[in-house]
Amino acid sequence: MNNSEKGDFYFGISDNKIYICFFEKGKQKYSNIIEFEIPDNLMNKLNFKPIQNLLKENIRKLEKRLGFFLINGNISIQSKSYQSILFSIKNVFDEKVLDKKIVINLVQSMIQQFDNNEKNLSITHIIINKYVIDDKVYSYLPNEIRFKKIVLEIEFICLDKELINKVKRLFNECKININKIVSYDYAKRFLISDRDDTMCISANKILNGENQSEVFLSEALPKKTSIFNKIFGLFD
Image (cartoon, rainbow, N blue to C red):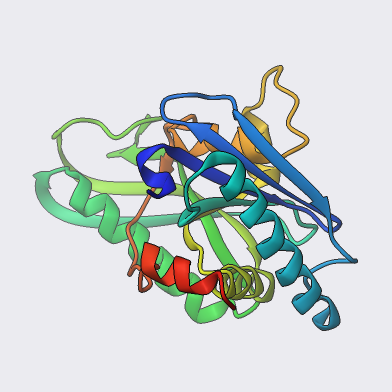
């Protein structure tokens, strides 16, 4: 049995600690947790292998405790590289009906421009803060109105690209599929009274739609780890 049938795993990663939290399906609080300190941080190349070994060891501890395999999870990262970058994008059409496809195309165009010009940052979250339709301002996408001019005010939440790549490599080595990477410094905006030392509660909120202005675009999924890969991985 794997975790997708039981609930969701979240990993909270800071410079000196990793938390692994398990949330049962439909619950906003974790029911199991393991935490452990790591030497320095992932950006130090000498620390990668020791951190990988610690992560594997603690994943197996939690699997043994829960009685099923950890196949995939979400990752929340606290990092000094966090940046919030604001953009506006405008387009003018012959009069037509506004739909989600038009907005998605504009957002994807903005992402492509960003990626072409920014080599050091990776986008983790996309927020549309404002829609300006024919000079009228909306905080949400209006439903199928006719329009000619649209302006989107977009916020990209970014983290260091090298850090993101190292995190992906770390979890790939541990045979864990990453569902979504969350920036903790962004997610904690939506904590009201909950204390979140683990960085996982706020990530759970975000991925369950806490910010209705956030846009989730699908991307090419990596090759999935199967339970069979996981079993054979126990002998690594």
